[in-house]
Image 1 (cartoon, rainbow, N blue to C red):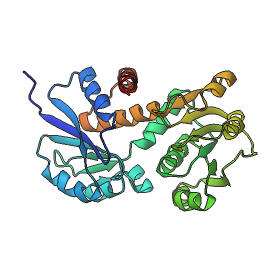
Image 2: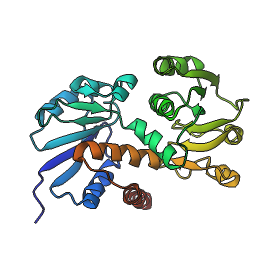
Image 3: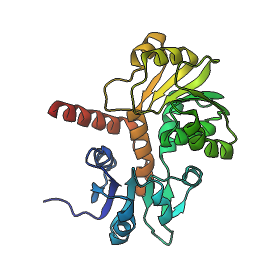
Length: 280
């Protein structure tokens, strides 16, 4: 007989069927020995978000929100500094024990914490390839790492300025935004690739010698384009699963009050991705 669900959480977004969040969170509940906890997935768009939150009963603890809900979520709770700075949240904690609803952005920790685990407690300079929402989270993560000088490589310099300048200005970051291609520049501490499309091999080869660590945040499309070159150069490489698992650990702590180790969650995600690949 299944245990009674006493604490409920879920990931919301549209589309949502592909989400790996239920695997991560439910594995964490098992690892932490939390009985009665369940994490599901619901397809919800911006117009439906308020009604969904209002429909949740007292057993609901928290929500993970992905696209297209991250900006809209700020309307429903007291926002953290990270969520306010980025004008986007991915985590909603229901009101409890006299505390108001709370909105956070754990994507920042999802970028920052793996870099620190790789041995980079501080950095002064960085390269970001791409200029969308994840690049904005990367700017905040890098600023907390101590970075003040960021080279941005983007397909559209104009769109990159529109996306990143407001956040950079708030954080006191110096941006050097250059068009797509191989930049000629000095060596930087950290490189983050946040684009969802393949990079040209010339760009990859041109960027690798410029950095001491690569973080390619994409996953689910095979090995990172930086993998072979990073291995040959002895450059540490982080991937999108590091981001996915680490941002979820932040949510799990907000929801449950407990910290889950990385390893069992990463193993569960990789096993699930292998299973899905085998079904194709």
